[in-house]
Image 1 (cartoon, rainbow, N blue to C red):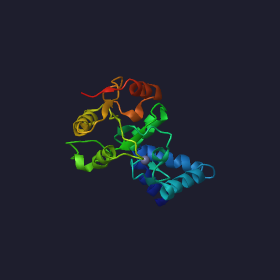
Image 2: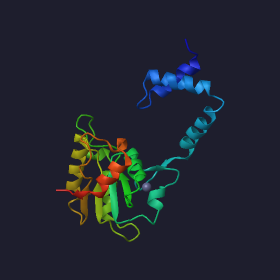
Image 3: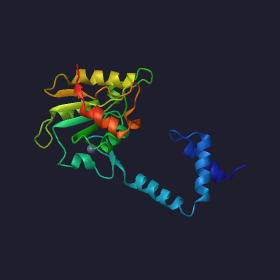
Image 4: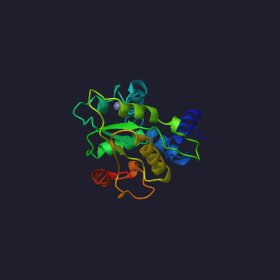
Length: 202
Ligand SMILES: [Zn+2]
């Protein structure tokens, strides 16, 4: 039987997405064997995340500054806003390095099954951003970059309806996206292609 410390660490790791109890134990063992070389950097990284990361009050990205580096970057196109479900989607799109506008993170997707309603998502702040001019420049295009899942597409549909009241062009990622595909899992080339070939909604 493993020590209490190891059990505690393993059960903490087992709660991470994608890690079950078995792989958590394997990770703990790996760390224990390399505690001289690997534990230090891991601890430092965890502490930095705990102490320095904040949620951007504009777009809900997670960064060490607020507003985040993307919102604060005035070289980015302020006329284009890309709406994503989660921060991981923002990161995936930004890794593809094709989109030069800014983002808005919904914090999830509409789901009847999980009881997620429009008011549970960052939709109010999205509408406010579109209604307002940021630095005197109005948003002209909204890219709905939802995942190609049923719930993602339901969310995109709902947003497209809510956005009809604004004089903005509404586009969505091209359906080179595999059905059921989550942006986070796509390679950067596929994502860049879906973005480049984005098309009007409706
Ligand atoms: Zn931001």
